[in-house]
Amino acid sequence: MKDPDRTIATVAGQARNDEVYRAAARLMVQRGYTGTSMTDLANAVGLTKAALYHYIASKQDMLFQILSHALDTLETSVIDPAKAIGDPEVRLRELIRLQAQGLLESGGDFALLFPERRHLESAQQKAVVLRVKNYLDLIAEAMRELHRAGKLQDLNVDIAARHIVQTVAGIARWYSKESGIPKELIVEQTVKFNMSAILK
Amino acid sequence: MKDPDRTIATVAGQARNDEVYRAAARLMVQRGYTGTSMTDLANAVGLTKAALYHYIASKQDMLFQILSHALDTLETSVIDPAKAIGDPEVRLRELIRLQAQGLLESGGDFALLFPERRHLESAQQKAVVLRVKNYLDLIAEAMRELHRAGKLQDLNVDIAARHIVQTVAGIARWYSKESGIPKELIVEQTVKFNMSAILK
DNA sequence: TGACAAATCTACCGATCGGTTGATAAATTT
DNA sequence: AAATTTATCAACCGATCGGTAGATTTGTCA
Image (cartoon, rainbow over all chains, first blue to last red):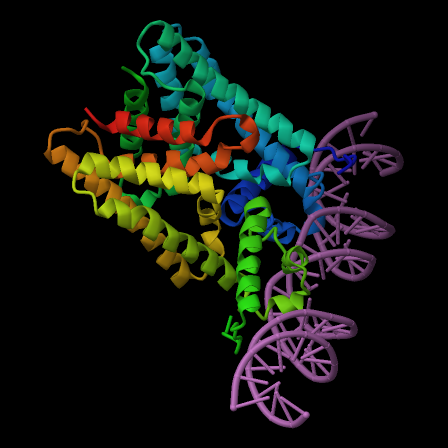
């Protein structure tokens, strides 16, 4: 738990550090947090368990870093671009499109690891949940603007916001490369489904 | 793994048996499959770990029984009633309504434990996934009928079926009694959201 | 009441868990 | 080249894991 005097300054060290976190995310998506042992992870990156702890503070902290990094990516590649859009309908459409697109490119690590937040300490849990809450509020706010413009169906925006993110995050739970469904089709259909659900 | 000569014939024994499986589902929802130890479960039902194995064959089989039982319930309380409805629009509306209602009554065990199917043996996994697939097909088929009747939006019914079940199952992931949102409102809004998403 | 089965116990099994110790090798800096 | 930092290792720690052996208590039924 306590931060050791670990220092990753080398270029090769930085690469190894990234490799550790990427492998950890991949393994935890496959087997879950408690189902992934530190020995598993060490073997996956070709290190001993002891060497692994040169790069991480603890298993728990590693999960927190993974979730935080995924949220950073969401912020820069979805939230920030969307916030720059004035028209609420276009903004909402872009929020959905960009999130779906990012999820299909990344493998959907965050959507699948978000439930594992239960293994974090309370303060870390709250930090993660708060950032997700802010994202939901962004979607709900766009819908409120649409309501004022008379373009929205008569519905509860908070519940609808949940439904929207569930359809997008849900893609990670059922999509498989072997299905033959093109990614672009999924993105397009997901945007259409949700916009049609809420617009008059 | 192998079936022991366990026999639960007493009335009190049957009650204990149910209690074990209910407690197991509750704990696994909270902490996940690998995060729930058999000692945890034994303590939760006031037994020793050894006595627990009088009621179950293995941890893995217990998970399979929990998922199978939840699917039995889905069949009798959602699928069968809906199949008796001729009009595809009413049938689909009922499928969504009944599933959302059942989920909010039961605590949504199945929706939350379904991802834990990865801990089952391959044959058990396939059995569970097949039953879910059949459920998705039922929804997709209703949409195909709506399409023939000219009532459906231009969309991919397989993807839309996934989106629908994700919004419903997703309720289990965000609903909390402390939110103050009445269950009836959630059911109504979920039906409305999805029907409006797919109908012309 | 005697026999038998159901239900539960204490004590244990080998394996694995997350994590650490203390030493050493490799790279970088001075 | 010496000093320092970064990266890695084998070996180990106490705790817990899923599961079992074998005996014992509790309840049912003839």
